Each structure stands twice: as structure tokens, then as C-alpha cells.
Length: 486
Image 1: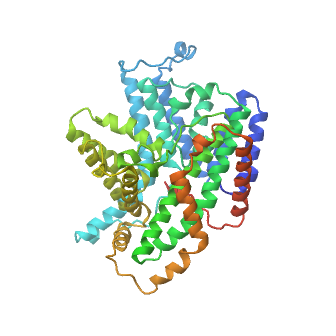
Image 2: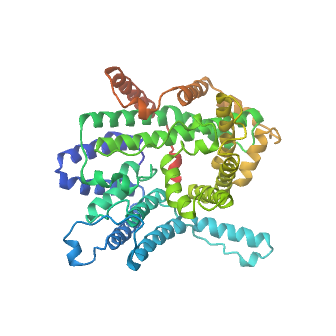
Image 3: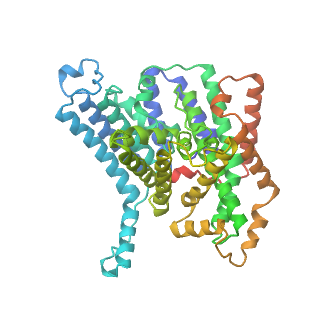
């Protein structure tokens, strides 16, 4: 079930909101949890058991971290562990179990096919085809496993560090893990950010109205902007061969598609969170305004960037052990970040390029080599670099990405029929959509800021945009969500 579907918009969401507000406070989390399981299991009910298993393990580990396994402790409030204080052997084991089981789930379901395929390719290249596995079965990737494993794991780490208290009520914890607005594509919600909200939060008309505005604008981003750009990107990338100009137009389309697709989803998730009283963190901060790659990662997918920083970069040593170790840590974090996005070599290359660029900018004094240029040109240079790296993110595999980059540089030989692409992608509808995308990306206020204070005119604009998005949605057959595959 996707947010931009008639089933979700006209049936699931209204029913959930109506029942949520009719129930007493003590029943709200149980209902949200059950509704989230229905949402998650709509396509494949078996995956619900996998998420429930992960939830149970981390819940028990949290109790062990809070030292709750005795009668006397169970009758008292769970204490907040002292930061930097000593930890028992049992607490260290509990943290290890939580991390290992989450990474094991993620590793098996996401990387098994990639690992066996890479092994077969290597042994075949070395001249030992008899050692190939040639497995007949493939592992199906559960929806959103990359997000909820990181989210659930943050709970154990936050409790261990003393950033949050362990939670005794299993329903509350299950609600945190499974909450449907951000379950399958983020933003990645940390337990420490919503721990207090799980216990006490306000439901106000102002918050609900802002949530509706967030949802409407996010849906408009997805339906009116991301989907048309996605059609253009798919046409060019799937053509197999394209001219230089068409290649640039295709990756430009993809840069708009992935931004409006994911930021639109995040807006809808944040909006639905507000409708049920939760305030989720901002996930995008005008990333195409960035003047360096370092700044880009302070603006793009903030929940993942800060998660990798706080739970991977800092534990690896951050910048505390000299410049060489800092460069290595930056590189390793982005390498793993690329692998997190997808089990394919093109994602590894994408992460590696960004890691190398981050390390180089740190070497250059935390600034890009083009820092001497005026601000608009710094933004343009950064965007140009991001465009090239998006090729590796979008291409179906590494050879296809290399061939596409060659086409962008004018080094590829376009096949017969490549000129026909222009007749498909340069239609007035797509050109107008591109102009709107550019205007919103570089000149319009962010949803987060625009919705802070809703006036009558803003409310009317929200209604108009929502109506237009729903009308267009009724006519669209093309409606993917990019980050669902992660």
C-alpha cells in the first residue's frame, strides 16, 4: 500500500484517523500498531512476522539494558542510565544481541543475492566455473527493512548510551517501530526523539491542520512533479543508448524525480505524524542549494545522514584520531551508506565517490576546490557533481552507469533510433514540469517553513493543490516510490 493510492487516501487513512480519535488514550497505541501491521502486510503478510521478531528481540534487549529482569526493578520506574557510566556484562551482551540480530536480518535479506551473485561472477572470472553456486532461489527483500532495522537498533543504542530510558510497555515500543507513516521509507525516527511523545503528546487542531498541509503538499510533489520526471528518466535510462543532450536531460529528470519523490514521501509521513500528535524531525533542507558535497549531506535525507554520523562515524572514531583516520572514517561511512541504499556495485561506487569527495573536502579545509567562485556558481558546481553521481544511483547496473556517463561526456556512440527519444521526452508538458521543478527547488520556500503559520489564503492554496493532485492521480498509471526498494 502506497500513500499516493486511492485505497490509502480515501479508505485506509480516513478510517485510521477516525478510529484513532474515537479510542481512549490507552487504546491508541495498540490500534496504531495493528493498523500499521495491516498497512505493512498488505502486499505480503509474512513480512509482518519478521518485523515482529525484530521488535520482540529489541524490546527484550531494552529491558535487559534497563536491568528490569527482577521483581524489585519491575515495580519501580526504569532509570535513565548514566552517560559514560559503567555497564554490566549483561548490558553489553544485550546491546550486542540487538545490533547483531538487526544487522543479520538486514544482511541476509538485502545482501544474500548480491553476495552469491558476486561470488559466482568472481569464480567464473578466475576460471573456476565449477565452483559457482548457481542457486535457483532468490531472497525477496522485505519492504522497508533498511529503515525499521535502523530505527529499532537506535532504541537499544540510545538506552545503552543513556540518551533514553528503556520502555516497559511492549505496545508502546511496537507502535514506535511499526508506526505506518514512516515505516517503509523513513524518515528514520530515533527512539530518543519520540520517547517522551509516546508517553505524552498534544493533539491540537493547529497541529492537525499543519499535518494536512504537509500531506497535501507532499502528495502534490509526488504526483504532479516526481511522476512526470520519472517518466522522462525511465525513458532515457531504459533506452540503452542516448545522445549527449538526451542523457543530460534524463539525469536532470532523475535528480528532480528522486528529490520530489522522497521529500514528498517525507512530507506526507511528517504530516500524518502531526495528525496523530507526533512531531517528526525534518528530513530535507533544500539540498540542491548546497555549495559543497559536505553541505549536501547536511541537507539531504537528514535522518539517515545524522544516523550514520551518530551511530557509525562517531563510534568509528570520528575526527578524534588524526587526519588520516578521519578521512578513512568519512570514506567508510559513505561506502556503507551506498551499500545500505542497494545491494549492487553501482550503489557501492555511488557511496565511494561521495566518501572520497567528503574526505577530499575535509583535506581542503572543509571547503570545495571551487570555493573561490561566487555563490551561484558554487551551487551549480555542486549540483553538477551530484548529477554525475545520480547516474550510478539510477542505472540498472555498473556497466550501464559507465555507458551513461560516457554518453553525457559525448564519448558514447548512440545507436540507431536514439534520436527518437527526443520526440518522447521534450513534450511541452514535461518542459513545463521541469520549469516548475526548478522554480520550486531553487526559489520556493520549504514545506517545513511555509506551513508554520497557516493563513486563510494558504489553506485555500492547500485545498487547491490537493484537489489537483487527486485529479491527476486518477489519470496516472505510473506511480512508483523510489525508496520503497530500499
